[in-house]
Length: 445
Image 1: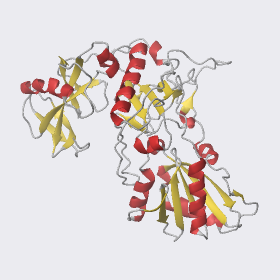
Image 2 (image 1 turned 90 degrees about the horizontal axis):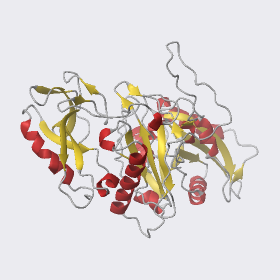
Image 3 (image 1 turned 180 degrees about the vertical axis):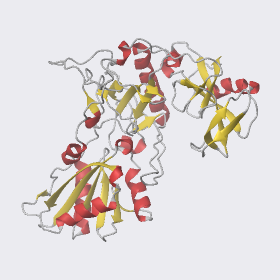
Image 4 (image 1 turned 120 degrees about the horizontal axis):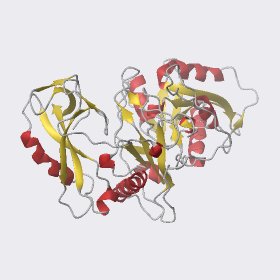
């Protein structure tokens, strides 16, 4: 389950993982009605949310990631809990705890099973920190980074790695986290994970109307289903699920273009019906859909999530986001903005990523397919008024979704950005005058 727009996670201070680009998809079941988060789910008791000494909302308590890890461990066909696990079964727990950087792990749980021949299989369920939850490439990248070797796969999405202790481990992604299995008989460990993967079903996405809490030092997870981030809407939260639905039931085969369009259309529709135009309102929209591999495993879910990003973090609110007083986003031409959009403006002499050039009308009769440049080409002429500098200037169009387009809207908001050697950079100064790159290159453009 992937998210769009791409949300980059700065995990290099923990371990240097190669982030997998997020490629979206999703098609609506024709029998499903669209619902939005404009009302708070009823609760029997309303308790005033806690405040700090200055009267500001305090972050809510979230669920226990260790409980999520434990829930992933269940007996499967041909494997039962072992009543008296051998002493060496604890070796896997120690090996995993030693092998994984602690700052990468949110929760773990362990168990020991035995097959019909009495062969023990030690298992550890790992839930990573939120920003990596659900990333389908996480396990493979993790093995590369921690061992320096390309992972060996015996098949069925299982990977083999060796811990520094010498323990041979089999790893399989559950979608939310991953499970590590080890046994004196490697085939038994692989068989457990194969059976587990065959008996599992795709995780349900967050239901429409759910409220979430994502800490400022976290990114939204790659997949929209971690239950431990769901919090009561009457309490403090900073993200809401506009739409969480079953998708793709009218397709016989995976179709990336159709899924991408439908994802954009349904999420844009939910946004417009709740807030108004994406171009003129401040909640940012993140959409999720299955990629081709997840589609093949039966994933048919679409989710649309909104949150309000500020330069110093996300706003904590109570009640529905749509009830807030002022959600308009109307920057002035020439305003400079940090890397999240929509965003607060900053002084152009402060490091920033984008500069607002103005709005333009797109000359297009049909919604552009992924990769088409209709929106970009409409913004390109606005670069003519800008000053040359030590980097290449380009444009990033925002604010026009597929639903609004089908209703007749053709206006996009144009943002300028700079790249050096093919990588997006922050800059100091105005593109209308003198400017210079700061820091190292980020996203490849």
